[in-house]
Structure formats: C-alpha cells, structure tokens
Image 1 (spheres, helix red, strand yellow):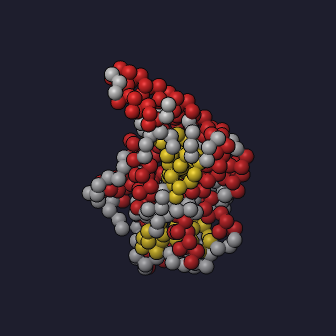
Image 2: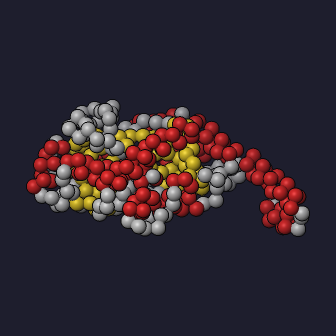
Image 3: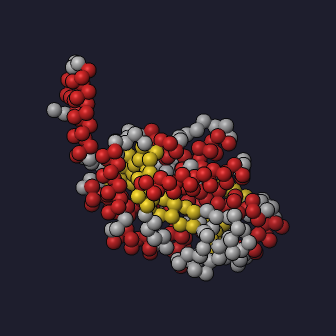
Length: 332
C-alpha cells in the first residue's frame, strides 16, 4: 500500500485504527530512511566556509546513506537568514538538512534589534554534528599598504569610514567579527555587505573592498598565490596553517575573539530514529580520508562534535555572540 492509499484508508477508519496505521507508517519510513535524495541547504553562495564544509561531507554521506545528498546553495542574502529560515520551515523528515555557521544564533537577535519580523528561531533546529571550528582571520590585498594590524588601525583613524570591508551580509559572521574589532580599536570602517563570503572574497581580490574576515580554508589558496596578506587571527592562539599570524589578544585586544564554526542541523521535530541514523552517518563521514584531506589542505582540520556536545557548544557560543550583538548595537 502506497502513502496515498494508506492515508485514504486511514480517513475512514476509527481513530484507534488511524493512529495504528499512522504509527506503522512512521516506523516503516524511519526504518527505511533515506528512500530518496537528501538536500543539504547551505544558506550562502559557493566559496564560503559553509560551502567548503558541506561539499566533502555531502559526498561522504552519499556513500554512507546510499542516496544522493545534494548541496543546495540558497544564497538569498541577509547574512544567511533566508536559507536558515527555509530549512526551518522544511518538513522534519530528514530530507532537508542545514549546513550553516555560527551566525545562526546572531541573525534572529539582529531582527529583534531592528524591530523586524524574526525569520526563524534557533529553537527550531537541533544540532546533528559540528564539522569545522576555525578562528577567523583578517585579510587584506597583498598590494595594500598595511603590513601589520597597527598600520591598518592608524590609517583608519586618519580616514574614519573610508576603508571598505566586505561581509556575508548584515550581522553575519564576517560582519560581527569586523565590528567587534572596530569597536575595540575605536575606529570606523565602511561596511559593504555581499550575499555570502564567496562574493565578499571576490570583491577583496578585485579591489572593491580592502579587508574581510574569513576562515583559513577560504583564504589559504589566495595567500599561497600571493594575492592576499593576513594581518591578525581572532582565535585564542595561533593556528598551524597560519603560524606567523598573531592573535588580536597578542596585539592588545584581549576581548576580540571570534570563531567561524560550521555544523549540520535538522529540524527540532525530526524523529529520533532518523536523528540517530544521521549522527552515526556524520560520525563516519568525518573519518573519510577524502574529507580529512580536503579540510586539511584548506587549513581547516576536522573539528567534529557529536550532537550532545555540539548542542552545549552552540548554547555557550550563541550566548557570547548575542551579547556581542547587543554591545555593538545597530550598525549598517
């Protein structure tokens, strides 16, 4: 009996029998998952950290789950809010997942800050697994006159509001990181929002903007090609892929700390048997040699967390980021 026939039959049955068939159908659906393609929404264009995380993971999951896992870049702008909201509204059946960034918690707070309708709430999602967790890096063109962070700060103080930087959208990860730095350095930079980190990086390479905050994996190829220079690291310590790049803390900004983590989420109402299957699949996917190779080549090693630990991490990190948004206040 197919789904349509089952539902037609259930409509004319007593309530007890309808419930019985409903539970039977759910059990069968969960046991067989997946029976068709799985969509992994990435709420940004290609070329950013979420996309960098999603593509090798999707290929690994295909082999594990036995069905295609299609990366769907929903680059609607708004710092990722559009794609996050689309994932939140999807059926909680395990066939629409979300690979997103730490801005997941920031964007609803930004909506509230500007008295806008909230596109989604973090409570609509349950964490499945963390994939990456990188300190953000401050990059400028190799042709820029600034050899150090202090050079940039000194120039910005002479020309308030004139040095443009790119971001993935208002109150996205790259925007918050730069405004956190600017607020502590007591400088004013010119914010130029794009539809994602990929377009922002393209704008930096073309000279449209003069600085961005980005993850190591997206910057490494451009730095290796001599096109970009990295001035500072938002992490608590230096990282292996950029050992010569000092942290903001080293440079006299002790509270300037920001990480771009990427993780897989599902809808809160997704059945637990499907959640368990996805957790097991992700546990295996991050061990795939191709996944490890791609991430390490990009300077972003796997930073896996299973759902319970990841949920606690998201809660703690989100509280810190929300506090930062409230401190920064309304910025354009």
